[in-house]
Amino acid sequence: MFLSHWSQDHETALKNFGSYLRILNRAERTRNIYDAIVRDFLRKTPKPVEELGAQEAFDYLVDLEEKRHLAPQSLNQRRAALAVFYREILDKPLPRTPGVRIVVAPNG
Image (cartoon, rainbow, N blue to C red; front, side, top):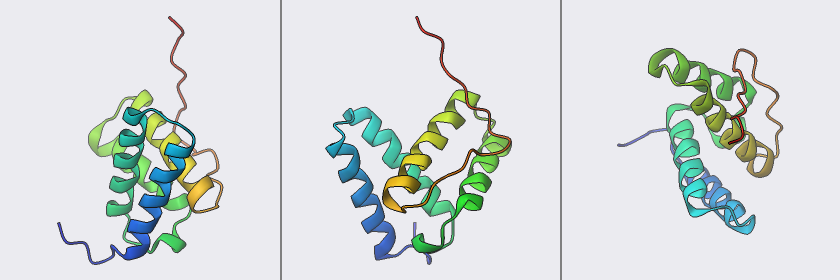
């Protein structure tokens, strides 16, 4: 798919994100899932990487909830991936997302 807003900055951000997750020794499955989430977010957000803010993440999560009816745990996973991406790659905090309920899986 050709995306007019996709740039080398998007590719660099994704590459840096993958490297960061490897440095943290995250499981390959986690790295693959987080990569897919951030890639999807970047594809659906027509802005340069340096212009991304909390509103874009919020809009993305709301869109997923409203159109795809994702379970709270799935939204939580996506928010967690975006929070790491924002904090470590964009060097921007991702504040708690209003309207997105964070669910903790029960032990056991």
